[in-house]
Length: 196
Image (cartoon, rainbow, N blue to C red):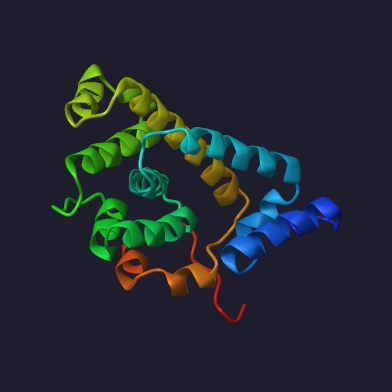
């Protein structure tokens, strides 16, 4: 990343430990966020507050993140969440969302979510009542539409910090992701080499 690592402190060590415990390694993006562990904790708490009380499934949340990351050109979150979506569905479906292509493997709800996330990312002022009607037609309740939109905005903020500070995807993410996902991520920053 573009910043040097923050000075050692108990809070920084806690953030690094948390990444090590959850991922098996300290993610590059964690080093950027470690400059403000309190804000990183706040982001995690807000994400949990939104997703833990939502009727959106984990698979639907993964669709949202993959479509958002791809729309932003964020290779980091695309690889991390592409792997999650591949596990929740299959590698071909994850690749399709990352490439904005269609597949019968995705439900109409998931396709609508993917389209909605990309519209919110690329032109939030260009969304229309027809877009909302399309979400309703695929079974989304008003609260789910609001939650999906808030989650897209949350992911935009998170990705923007990572990308602007030069956090490159970890080689571990590339190694763990299915080949179809890695091949689909043709945008954003290049991953860190294994021997870097």
